[in-house]
Figure 1 (cartoon, rainbow, N blue to C red):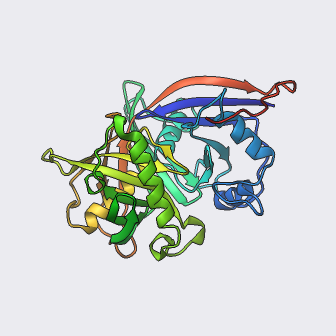
Figure 2 (tube, one colour; figure 1 turned 135 degrees about the horizontal axis):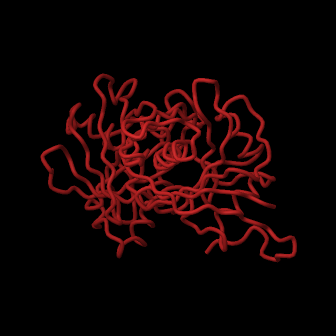
Length: 342
């Protein structure tokens, strides 16, 4: 096996873009290709073994990756209106959305010359993902990419104060669908704060909440069952407002206990919808969203829409930096095969 990638980090969260080495994935849309990737009889977090999933395991497992690795397979767009399509993957399977990955892909599309961009100004990269079409606006100055803003699919709030029983007591969570489904809860309600020293406790309660919501009607997507089910649990601290809008610090526990090092792109979109539904974020105001490692996304809700109805359109801005280009090999005599996870 011979696989070529280019890697980025977005606010500290890795994103590995697979350029070569994957088998063809049948399907007419990105959503259909995701279903093929999962395979008959598999689930998003337990894909059926196959040639494509062997590549995912090779790239996300040690010694070539790690349990926090994230990436995407480039696939054809749904139609000629988009520049590219992508299947997002992580250590447990295939996700329906990835905001930080969209930011990385926007930067890569311009860096690689796939999409022409001015030295000063913006270039728009249209990307088809399993949850729909998103746009990455790549900001340029002096011939360099200085930031990326991604516009997500509409975000809809399905619950605001849903009681959930945990080992730390009953808490009220908000649930929003923003390409993927996120449950969010103040860390203080669980007797915690968002800091790296408490990551084991934050991860454990995040997994509890995700499991507790598995059968809740609130986690069912209003129109597409393929987007149902809690993907991430956002635990957040309230920080003093900075004059431009709310400020929060969060850690997002997603998939099967994976920690987002960034403020979580799609999760930020979900938080924006919840804040709008609560009347805490008006059009023109911004959410400053910090991660557990101190990196920042800023987000805003565009005018129009209803977070409790058809949804609101959100934009999230961050930075992406290339970290390397790789040619990964699998020696047929390597007894570890596609690797291992610890």
